[in-house]
Length: 396
Ligand code: AMP
Ligand code: MG
Image (cartoon, rainbow, N blue to C red; front, side, top):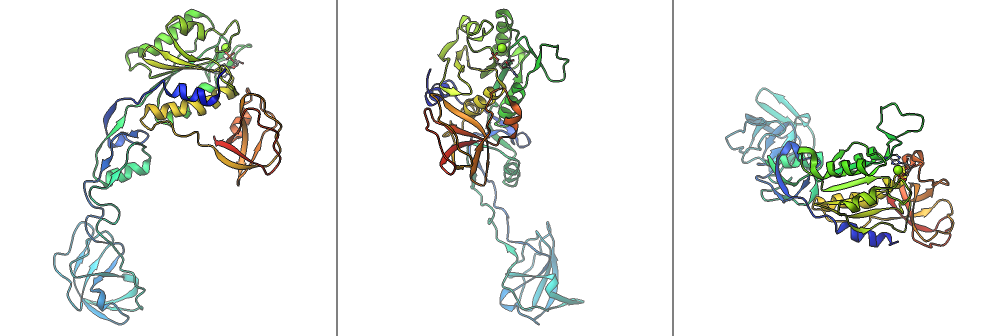
């Protein structure tokens, strides 16, 4: 049995970043930027009015000052002339500020009579102008690697970037194993259950930019497991998997055949047991061109292992490297007993800096995982801890 940290190091060594490809901007969100994106222009590209009003020379702005309106500037239509003393240009939001003008007096502060305007309020000092390049200047970058969010897509568009270099979505094959399993929506027999963690893992890894494939359920026999493993490796006409994840069948009971079958197919096994709770029967290695991880079948164990090991693997596959585990401090809201020899990740709720672990930590109980927003991490042999003591947790 190896420690969680040792397992982390071995497992992360099984994967490398995927190739880089160029995609249209619309496909960029949810992908990881591979090369810095560089702005092709200033934004705004000219000094732009941020209000509807009148553009005038700044030195002339004061209550009761009068101006003659000499023209108009609207978004997309600049005023070509120059604003001189005593002159004003009617201007709208987004329009280029005409030469000579330094302030846009908002229309609410102006009385207009024909072509004459009078400022009716004392000046509050605002110019109401967005300076050229104040958002970003030509040459500014969005730095890679970065998981692109919708707001990044908007920024890239404003930079006039229509194609971006991103890491290929790593293909993750999820293989559920067990005679008892059916997929959601099916009619389970009296001895059957619905495969659940498969769909939690799918959502978890897709959110990190993976192309997840849910393969058919493998039955608890060698032939069936081998068939589905081969399916994952070959990709069925599509790209083969970068990461093959099996769920269940990973301990050493009579029906736990995944390890045996993978070994017969040439699995170069890095380890098969870790000092972690939940998740002791975790297995990992290289199988052909793919990394392979065998997760325990218990729903909570699989999800916790997914959070701790698979999410960072997808980060590495998408060029982001494996970040530090990301543990955060909080104060205990209820005492916890002494921990055993395995690193324990307890379902817990953290609120306003206080963390409370659920009393029931049965690794089959999904309702408590769904209620949790944190995993309280107990190091091996951690002594009992009292209310108010500082502990570490992983947001989940
Ligand atoms: P195993 O690791 O195959 O011994 O499975 C441990 C427990 O997890 C058993 O109760 C299985 O029925 C259950 N299990 C295995 N795979 C899944 C799955 N994909 N979804 C939900 N439960 C599962
Ligand atoms: Mg099983």
